[in-house]
Image (cartoon, rainbow, N blue to C red; front, side, top):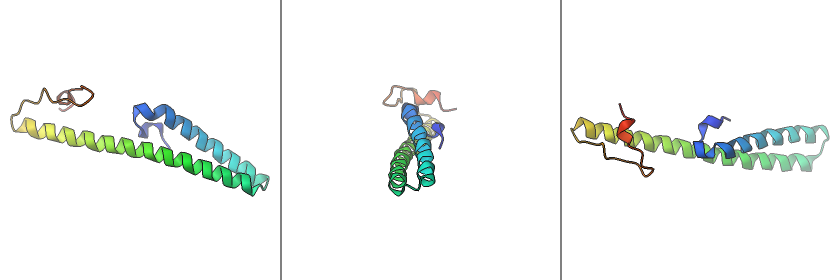
Length: 101
């Protein structure tokens, strides 16, 4: 689990989930030592839910990266055809042609 595999806007939430997963694992070990099956099962479920949320954040970053790469390829193609793409902007008003070398 890596904090850098998520979008910057999700980093705080991802860090919370990573910390929580680690806490769940510690609680699972404690429940095993105490031979408490109910507590162990509860912590397994909680950890699983937190991991799913992390996986969703990882997928969001992957989708973003794929979309970003597609846009960069379109800009490269347009530039190679002689189209001036200085005005091509993302929804966030970032000019992509500055990023493409």
